[in-house]
Amino acid sequence: MNTPHKDIVDDIITDHREVEDIFKELESDHDPATRRQLVEHAITELVRHSVGEEMYLYPTARRVVPDGDKIADHELHEHAEAEEIMKKIEKTDDEGAEFDKLVAELIKEIRHHIEDEEGDLLPKLRKECTVEELTELGQKFETAKKLAPTRPHPSAPDKPPANKILGPGVGLIDRMRDALSGRNT
Image 1: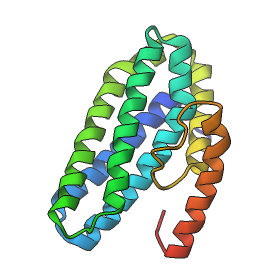
Image 2: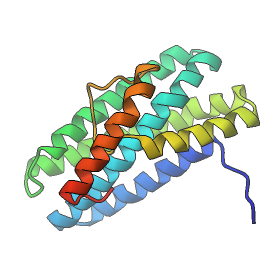
Image 3: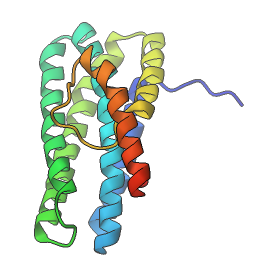
Image 4: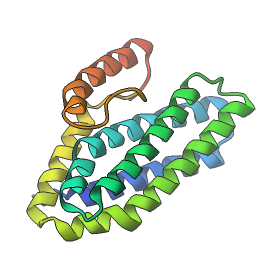
């Protein structure tokens, strides 16, 4: 059966629910090795999701949503904060109190970000764009996630055109590093 492609709003909300499921597992599992795997999985998904948003959601919001520049800047600031936390997590031993503190901080930051987007930006975007535009953006968003890096790069550009040029190359390098290190992505 052929089902129509979901739009960018649906795709983003689906990603949010998947990350929330990982967070719930993290909050209930106390085995350090399992927690590290769950955190790495969450980071991979969050980085891919962020790249898709930075390439397609925020530029569109700037163009069509009232106060789109202000909203996009706020969301990008939240991305930068989350990426800094993710980078710290990658460098932290998974059996210490610092790891748990950083994971809790990341979960809090991402939940706040999800609440912002779903409560403000996404409804405004759905109102301002046609179904066709949203569907096309959804396809582009999903493609961007497939090419995106799998690790946080806080100093990488987050606005077009630089992010569209550099992102896929960084993603390729990350996937090669993941394969060589045995990290599942």
